[in-house]
Image (tube, rainbow, N blue to C red; front, side, top):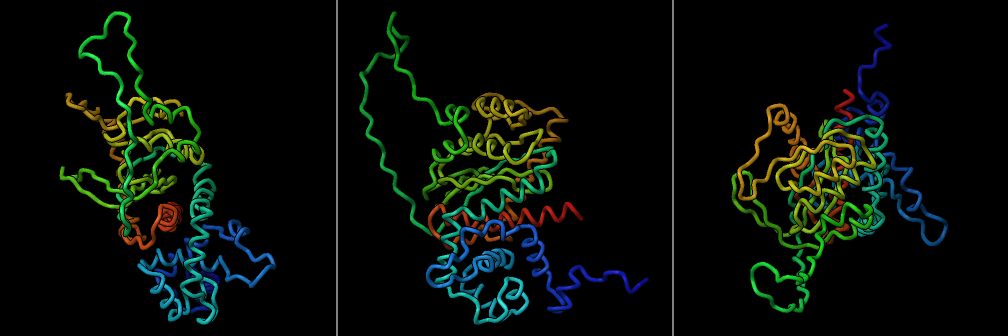
Length: 359
């Protein structure tokens, strides 16, 4: 009987490769959930020109880059040449089969332009989380520092209207209507229209940290929705200067197409009547920290406060992304490539958290 007991987590692989390191086991778990082949049809060689390098192996290598926390592609290539186990797990039997840095760069651009990491993440969330009811969605944003110059936006020339006296309008005087805010328009538009309306250029962002001091950075801002279990289900990258509240409705639209949930947990930056109403229109109950706005702060009752404490899930995911999956080491430029880099880390976090729920 004792001979039938499986004593290893990956018996076939360990018989073939020998003892597997902890990082390689993590890499195997992540890749096993991605289902890369179903997303790679558009990257396959169709018989014209020189045969391309295998894009599936390159995509696995970019996941390994996140898992092993390599800052540069050069470091990844050198490691794959020396480490037989990881190289063979990616799909290259010999070191000379590993593509050059230029090929990695071209493949990464193809992945970024086609939104491959986003599509993989969406399919994985729907497959493993979409069938179950999520209790809470925690919404938060985090600063993403980039190595590029901020874009200078030219201010539109506004023709001043006729001046009027201060105070109450005269009898019969019609005041010009104020332009509608972005948050007011988002509830009536589709997700695609809302995403196209959000600025994605690199600029300067400022926010207050937990101690009340202002922090400034150059780059972008990543907005995340996370469910119980610290699983990120939706992500949007915007300009660093964009306020968090202007991305809440697009995030809610994106998440509602993937997961059904009960509560929306948000901090005081999202305390807006439009966001409250849109959350209720989806059948959710919004729990938002009150923003006093020069008034007395409204405190939560003990039960709501206890439920609101679950919002730290989004903060843990942000911290995990930056500390362990390349969120602090952005070596590419442009919103499209930066988002692809971050999404390789996000799909790694998603896969690992799904495995932890199964244990």
